Image (cartoon, rainbow, N blue to C red; front, side):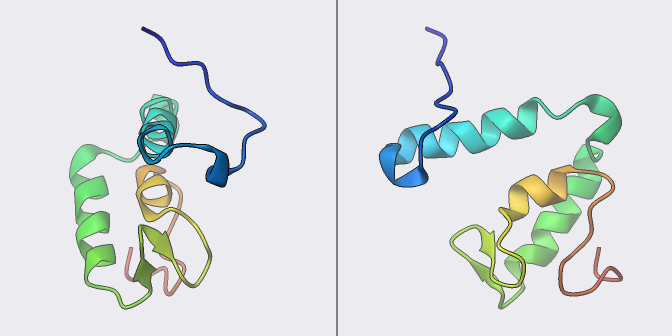
Length: 84
């Protein structure tokens, strides 16, 4: 069964499962030319998981979902572009 995204819902209105799926659905639908290669994505996430600014999947510096930011090839770490 296909899920219909809730375009005007706040996060508090989504169940935890819907919330999780909506983030990963967004990542899966990033156009290929904008998407980071899998190895780069995994390397970025590895660096994020060792950062003190990672809180519940979000960057405390910029407020992004790190898994979304890391999935976009032209993005960089909010703390320092040299990290990734």
